[in-house]
Length: 79
Length: 480
Image 1 (cartoon, helix red, strand yellow):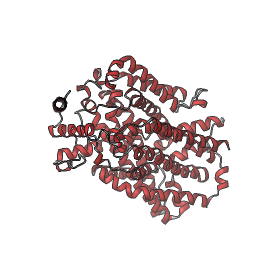
Image 2 (cartoon, one colour):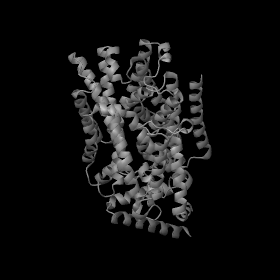
Image 3 (cartoon, rainbow over the protein chains, first blue to last red):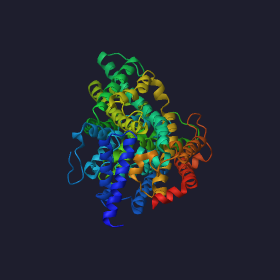
Image 4 (cartoon, each protein chain N blue to C red):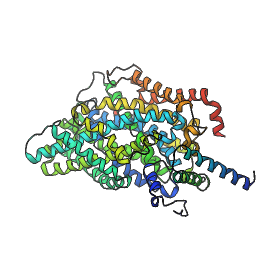
């Protein structure tokens, strides 16, 4: 797919999305703003640090801290 | 209306967009997600250090002494917060959306409505009622000090004070999230200082030895059972943050600003406030500062602290009701979107207002309320966690989420994903089988694995299996 084709496809998705929202009773201005926001998230913010998923390491550290808190609690009650 | 370099549009210039921005489901953009880790820590502190934490500490004292109580609080809150944060905060931070929109994949549009109008609504009405009654008790104690007569802990002044607190909370709510945030930024640090002061005051008026040697107030014969029930109760408290955390964490700047302040902020602030309640219950015989603050702290200091506590309850109420009303609005389809915000918030407060006429009932049923809401919320957390991390691999299609039944990815027959609702029922049933908080019957296994964590696992596994069986093909397509 060329950049022009992709742009046209994106535009089609965008229009279809807005018309479906308007059909469901959403005000056109609200539907347009919602589509604009999703577009920004998909295109401009896609690679932004704040939009990255939680990594396996981050999850492991997080769960590890919880296990440590539980272990400290067990130690307090055991002493 | 124009966009700046960060894609942010001044939506406040258009009344329709402004309303939707404040009270709707617009996914937030980078420029709008302004909370740093420190900001979010304060928000969580404001929520966690609310006066319900004193009551949790006092309820823990029914079963265990100070040392075991602190251990039970640490273990219980750490476990409960761990999976609650993973189930709500992580996804909402990444996608900038509140958790009820993101739950459409797990429950379907109508299924989320069922969840919100039952589990979430009842839970949040219960907490609001309790906060109103606590504010009422503070009012009654202040009035007693002023007139020099005992007006009672459950008398008519409590009801009047509770109703007044609800009226003020409604006023704050009607002003929107900005006012709530401003009030929180004043109340939270103040309440943190007051809570630490109360702890120092308690130790100064008793002693460490008295605190450490104090016996639990009404324990069972089996000390292991006492400890596990105390842990379980605190897991329920940790999980009880689920209904509000997604709406808040979407405002944070990064994963680090969301994850650690949610877990650590809630854990530490909750622990400090609960320890005050635990220590007060063990040494003074009552966890509620509205009862002991004036007799022990003197009338001037006591009244000042009680007025502060009453205001803290009002801001806590506003914060939790704001998130709940957002959820109700989103989940009702077109039914409630045209109902004015002020009317919706007023309607929410009807039941809590009625409950202020029965203040004793709210206090006496507190532990059962926390455990029962925990039974359902742990199951919801288990399902949300499996849905986000295992089935959807941390990916959502935002357009499809907002299309709901009109789309393809998150559309289900009658709008209900039965895999989610069946898993919810399975998780809650397992919880109530292994530990029934109403009859206090437990299975032998309860002493080893407690109830909340295994209930979340049961709900998650049932959801995973049922989803693969019912929608395996669709899930594979969505991941491509």
